[in-house]
Figure (tube, rainbow, N blue to C red):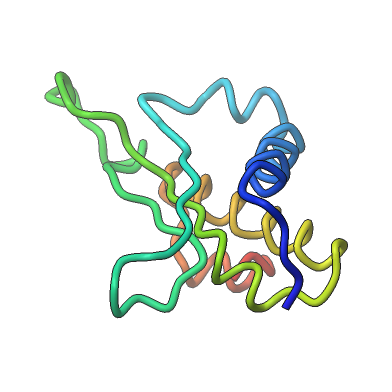
Length: 115
């Protein structure tokens, strides 16, 4: 297991977000990204998207709390063995969860290598 401080991890998430094409990030709407240490009890996940994907929003979508992407630090650290590994895992999870915001399914993300 490779460990980083919470501050370092948040910087890695920021770096991963900086790597997402600017035009794509400009299309996100009503979205918050947050770092948490652990997923909800009983969930063995590295990230979680909660919200209404852009592809499912209709003309009645208004007054809704922001969608939230949670990036979970401890599960990512547990599966990482080096600085390079943790950077790559953070990148994959960030892209994976942003893709859910755009309505891309887990099956398609597996095909694209972002599982």
